[in-house]
Image 1 (tube, one colour):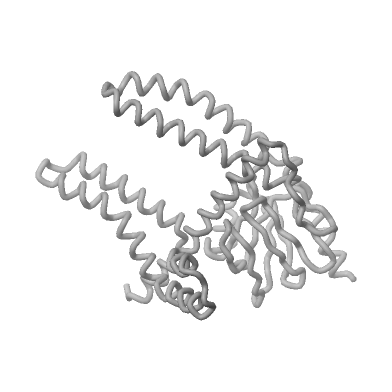
Image 2: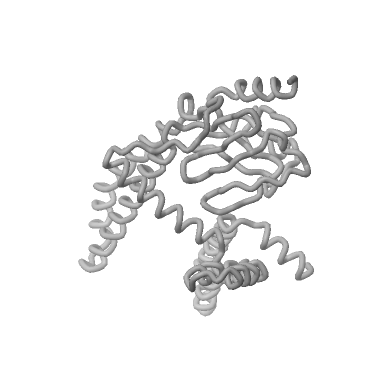
Amino acid sequence: MQPSSLASILRTTSWRDLAGWGLAALFLVSIAKALAPDAAKPFLRNAGLALPLLLLMAKDIAHAPDAWQRLRSAHAARAPWHARVTALLPPELVGMLRLDRLLWIGCFRRLRQQTAACALPEGVALTYLERGAYGTATAVVFVSLLLELPVHVLLLNLFVADAGTLALLHVLGAVAVLYTLAWVLGDRWHIGAGRHVMTDDALHLRVGARVDGVLPLAAIARLETVDAPLPAWRRRHGVARRDMLLVTPFDQPNCVLVLEEDARVDILHWQVKRRLPRYVFLYLDRPELLAQQLRRRVAA
């Protein structure tokens, strides 16, 4: 494989997928270590720790020209020093830090029973919470976490004898539960009434702090129904993963917007500015409402 091809693969692979590859490599090495002779186990242990780091480092190097360009732009704009440091970091990492901050803010505001401000314009509301499973999933997370605490304590007391290690594991478990609860509460606060809005000339996409952007109706070629699980639909239509974007709070999509080939639309996705791909998958309570509005616009 040519170096340019490898760099292209690394650039088009998301950081989340790359982290999954790293975990898979770590799992495979751990299996090989269990089956290998004792002499090879130290080498396999080091390889298992190094492989995920090497993958992340390779992707960071593949994005080095982008980082250099961001740094030059920040320098030309006379940005403060922390903005220049941020320019060197992967945008996805910066976006996750911003998202974490927003979700904690949303959690505190929900606990104080503050109402989320609506920044969407007037238009046709395309809801996604009325018939979706987002509320049920949130309740399941809360129940699971509350049931996990006593089970977690019991299992640790049975298998960990050292008092210091036991206390550390209890603290880490409590922090993980607290973080999950805060993210769920914050996400629900940001989602608010849970809707996109269609105006005369644009579709305003909004899923809390996760997705925010404006899609001109002129950029939409057609709307199709998603009548199968997403992997099966993608294989049936020959759509690559890099050419699709999922815009749902939790549910599987039931419709897809196919954009014009020359569409150039940027939105905020996971707090990172991103160019919309050709296929934008949505879950809507009433997808026929969006189809009806698009037909009316074409007829007009």
